[in-house]
Image 1: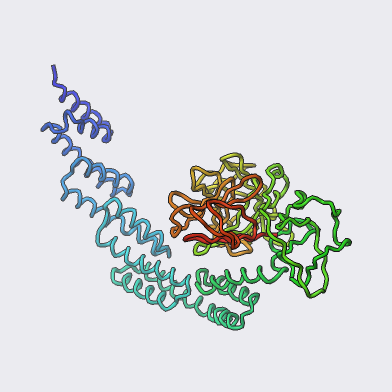
Image 2: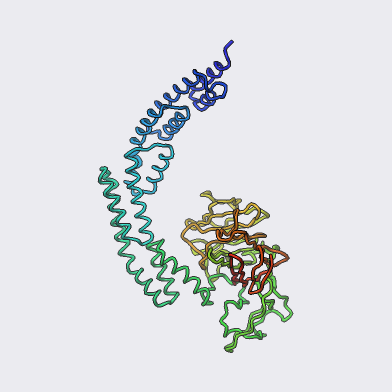
Length: 525
């Protein structure tokens, strides 16, 4: 009767003859036979056979197969010298193929392929030189996008010298073309950049915004232009009622006090301007506006009287009704959350959020400045899950959405052909989701992201918060309770100048100051 180890090795040999090398390795590596002299010899023979097959596959341009064989040969204990020689031979064969990406003007693709080969230990002098050329070229492209043309020219000169040194004539010609394109962009950008700095010196925000847009059209990552554009949007929205109209008004018969000039507000409402009776309930649901301070949701009278109306004391903000979530456009339960040292966020609290093109008449809850429809798609929350409902061309992870699709953490949503959003649900204990604009589009106001707030919103702390803030050690929680927005934080903190312990209600104009954190809320009309 054959010994047990003989039976196992015979099974391994049959698997190897059938080309099932993974199965053969598993059998020959079993603990009861792995150290047997015959098993060691068998694994050595298999490793050499795999190296030979990898060489044949490399010669026939089967790169993936050759890499897989060499990786398996290494696991079988192939001789290091034989393995290194086979990988070097494969690297020399594939170097010309990778260099073709440089010839076509795509250094990023070339660099990705070299890095992928390096992860499989396939490397050699030709690939290393290709990598140096690609890295210098890619750095030049990045510098050009930031408007650092001097450094970009230096990197392209270096890439051109390296390409000439290895006789890569196709790559050298492509780099020379890139230098001509860079010089053309530099000449085109000189005028807009000068206009931007002149506008900044004058301090006129509409002019600054237009100048920044002109620069970014040519230099997409110009730091001064991006900062100027962000600041200009904030200033225009803060000082100009007309500019604030880009955020769609909730109803044509009411104008929020926050966006009226002080001289236009009087203490007494005008009967002619008030479409609702005097007994109308406060914070009327039908308006879709969350009036702070407990006033009637009626239009304030406009008068040239110079004295502003006295400010009412704020009351906790009423939250949008869940029953109204199915109405077209939602109930517009939105506000801006500015977290000091972190950034600004648009917070949408409705179960249904409409995505569409920004504009004065746009019904969108999330207005995007891009080539999309005014009523393009809607994201709907149902308990702990989300789905996107497509009204126009919409894709999730590159796949077209037919009517609707379920959203999962990490999904990339594309509206039309260019507008892209990333959907994240970072916290496993909260249904709140976060949207990040990953394309070069933006909202009318400069914010860092959009929150689709369910019951809670976590700011900072450990774990996976909705708003990452490394400087905040313990999480600050915003949550809904009894139709009101609340804040919970460790220890004592201040809300609108009043000291609170552990938790406190908020309005949509509240400012919160605590130990190591501060943030403020701002209503959106």
